[in-house]
Length: 74
Length: 74
DNA sequence: GTGTGACTAGAAGTCCGTT
DNA sequence: CAACGGACTTCTAGTCACA
Image (cartoon, rainbow over all chains, first blue to last red; front, side, top):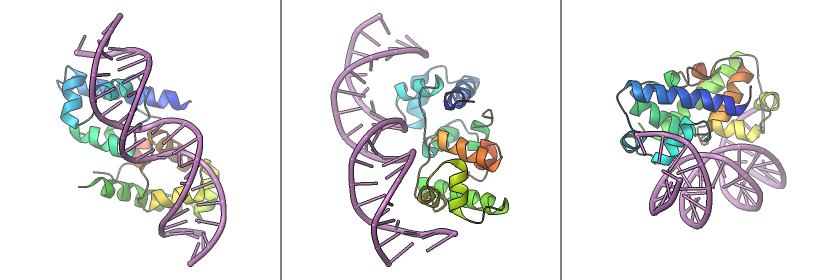
């Protein structure tokens, strides 16, 4: 299980939660959580390795716990 | 709720889990997960902002899921 | 056995744009 | 609306000597 796989699981779950909550654009959501649109894009594609602070920030923006956000990572 | 507080919650939980699993020294555990002793120390004290890769690595070393490792973060 | 400050290389994260 | 690239600044990863 590579690190890249973990990031992908995280990214795909983020994308799922974002769309589920009605954020149809990465840009609107990025602005909502105070991050850059290209950065959210990179995370969702599994290319980025976000820090704990960023994970918490995104979780709050989705109104889920950090544990729920990383729940799909094995 | 500052970012520093999140890191502390994470660090304290890590320390708790580490000791609970019989790793009496940071050094032994650090070697077990392939990280530096002083780095683990920094995380446990909330001074570090670990990336997703590091979180996953530590979770595996503790034989818990990443979700369990971040469970105490609000 | 742990806390701490300092350090360098490299990655995180931003901002501009194009496809 | 999203993927992707380049260039940029800020910060983390990883390590050390020392308290």
